[in-house]
Image (cartoon, rainbow, N blue to C red; front, side, top):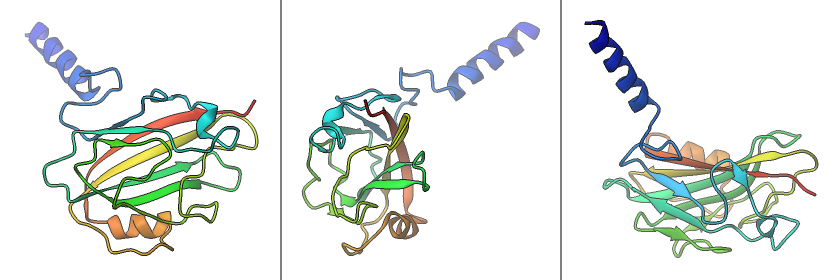
Length: 175
């Protein structure tokens, strides 16, 4: 009896840990990754203020069948003045498998970042290593928002519409 309980405990722990892949993802969950850097790996300088300031290529996978659109928020919670927003995108087609380098997907809308622009602004930490969260959301709706939309306004508009989410974290420290 103790052996069976132990086996159930071990199997339950493995399932809870998402032991199905190196990123810790469970099968059939929304995914985001990049061929430019691994989860919790260093973002190449090319994608920062020290390089071309180009958005990195991203790969999207396992979008739920009920998704009508995707949204992407990229931010840095380690910024000295509080979370700094680097990119705000919504109404990305759920058929999107890749977001190309230095490009927003066709038909996607971009909102205001903390750089005061409507496009990607790369990492540029004043000191130390910062974490950059690439947060992807599958939504059961498309959103009617304008170009002045901020991260906060996008998050409010997404309330009640998020059916899946995924996250990729990149690290960057200026040399």
